[in-house]
Length: 246
Picture 1 (cartoon, rainbow, N blue to C red):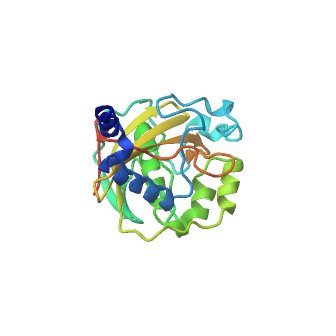
Picture 2 (cartoon, rainbow, N blue to C red):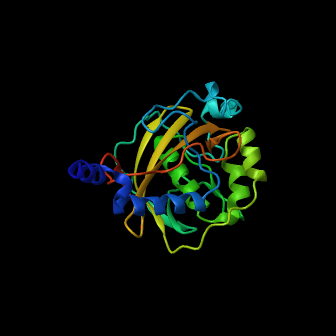
Picture 3 (tube, rainbow, N blue to C red):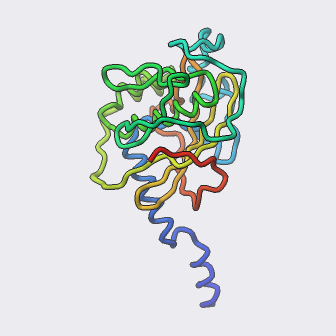
């Protein structure tokens, strides 16, 4: 009996120090960002993304004519590539508290007077850069309304995010940086799974769904404007393409 109890305790990840560290990381990620662009509810971490027009959460964000034409709103190049199997060579800039990638041929092609970074190439690399820049912008709570207005796909979720009260993040010395990625890509939709590492060693991952809309990558949110899927803890970075700027 005691042996069985001991075995159960050892196999339970919720009792391990690694889970406690990862849980702190998840709290930090959620506190840092009100607009988290993830997979529609009920799909689970291992499921492929649904077609954008078929989900109630994305029914209002069907790609526009400009999106289907594939034209970048700021003239960045597009390619026919649909895969990204290696880490791109990247210049990194600190955005809020997170390092974000930048490249004149990939994006951001526009940075406005509020610091909102937009216009990314219609490519797998462009989608990756867009997702990381979204998260980096979210590390600054003061940018929440502008993030929702400019970077969320059109629909009720975007409106709800614009009207949401500001997030009050708890005081913390925890810093989070990108550590790896995977990209699933089609012409008008991309799913970018990012691995994050905290300065205390904790690891977590999130999947971000993007639509190509009005000549740029836009993040998909629930009709409520709330996250559709919380970050999940991961034990290590196996399965991810390693990539970091800090």
